[in-house]
Length: 273
View 1 (cartoon, rainbow, N blue to C red):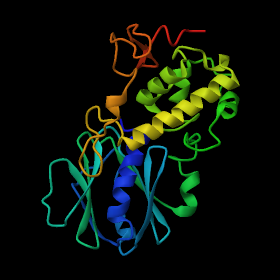
View 2: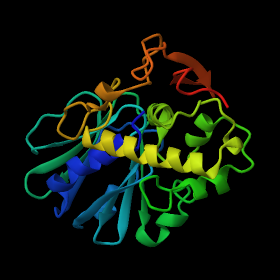
View 3: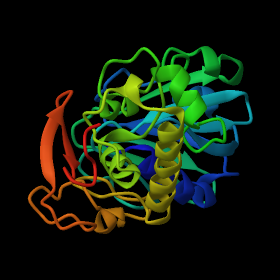
């Protein structure tokens, strides 16, 4: 599933292609996504002012005060194409903009979803209101994490993947950040000191920024807005490297399952404290 770097990469790719354009019309495949499609016609004639990200949602801000909130699900992809480009398989939404431009949404499994709200309603919307802090902000640090995790008896890996604590870190980036911070993924979240949590927060920021610069991580379906894969997978130091030598100490990387998700770590560099 696309995480923060992948969604941020999509935002960066779409902005220069569709921002400032007027939404003229829409069409769809007649199939719902995870939820029924909203009435896109309420934005016909409006200009797309800005595209941004909140957690794993793309937010399309129109100048009529409406926002399209879009989640890519497991296999969602956006493509910007000329209006004459033929429709392809699994293309479920087409938004036609001024300047011979269409924004096509493809989703093989249809686990993605899209909703519509007023700008004033965004923070109270059910998809947004309970989300945790954005990890690339200055407020995300050891002190913040200590406050959130002081009573958490779950593993630190599971805590980092809880969107009520921090958004968008995901399985890959949690494994990579814990490896760099030399923290065992099984470590009880509440046992970590503020200093150690601050180290973890800094590594999460570094890993996410590196992934954004690399265009995200393509494991199966993710592609950028230009159709190209992300290349951060070439930089994995722990994720997906079970039984391969640790790049720091050469001891084999181990794989365990925490909260139903695969976790990769070095038993020497990430000793359980």
